[in-house]
Picture 1 (cartoon, one colour):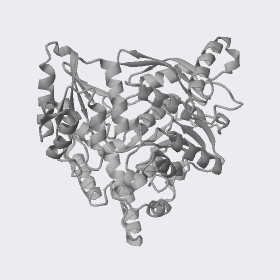
Picture 2 (picture 1 turned 60 degrees about the vertical axis):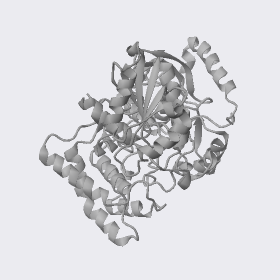
Picture 3 (picture 1 turned 45 degrees about the horizontal axis):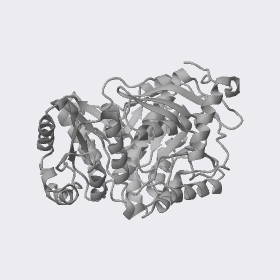
Length: 512
């Protein structure tokens, strides 16, 4: 193991950076929604070291080959399914706090980076994880929901926890879960049990740092029993409005609950009312703030084969020559947020102006994957999976597809949850879909294909809508429509609407 600090240098030693500072000044000038008077990051440095490395092969695990392990994992999933699902909530952290207490407070055994927001949380978490791994820190990552396997939610060193370990962790915490169940008014929910498992697994590993994505909201989210030294807020938009609020500002009030006393806050670009709420919260708890477009940001980006080429401005200086194998401007912005979060974790900023080792940063970003987010799973015709499930997410996906692929004809496959703004999602995709095949996934929350079709017809017109109740039939129909293009190499298919839809499509297409 290395005990060296991440390599750095004083940016004032680099006279050739003057020109790039001018470029960043232009970005700052264009940002009219920021308060320019807040201080840049000044965070405590941590230098934990452990062996780590990027995951190999498909980042999404298949079902266990060993039938006994597969059966044990299925039994755990079935037991967890008897609890409240992720959409049924009793806003409180009392139950998870009680579980942490009887488990011996495992979440206090390591520092944490806590991530909230509406869109981009999982991709940002994966980028943060990749950067920390590249600097030889052992990481635990907790994200939700999963694309294919429940084990994806708990990752160690960039790879999903092994199925055997997942089962063992569940059985380790089960007696304590039952103790809390017996003492509380309501049993622990599905998400609360998984959160307890993640924190216990991280302490047992042990990890040097946990990268934790909230499930929903912030203040009363089950993950919020950690004291994240770095709090990250990705872009806030309207989603879960029945629980979080009807405006970005109201939603930000709840999400700002992850900002703890003396923490460092990394803010992605936000609507004005959301930014005001988050900045007020930071002031109340003496947190320091870095804002995208002010203290850090994307200086330049160019579309490249298999992704994009970036120059990022961190809180400590410039990082050029970064290849990110993900598509879309939103992913570039996620990368800037992730970089700033890791700089903050290492204490970069303020009077300690320096950059992390640029080659290590480049290596980390080049290794990033984000399954189900602008993921190409087939060629001829090209089939893309993206888990956009709200209008803001759909809009950035539509922009990314147009920019990166330039299809002559694009067919959409859409299955969405009935509690989402389905019309808003369809309207965001209408300009880029030549036709749309509406379907449904296996979730009980999925909107029925006929009901979804009725909305789609109002948005697209009857001639552009096809209904296929089975997802496999919908995929086949969309691929057939794409292949009808005279120059079929220029046609494509985008599967979207929910993480569940994308996960099930991924299984079907990768088996094919």
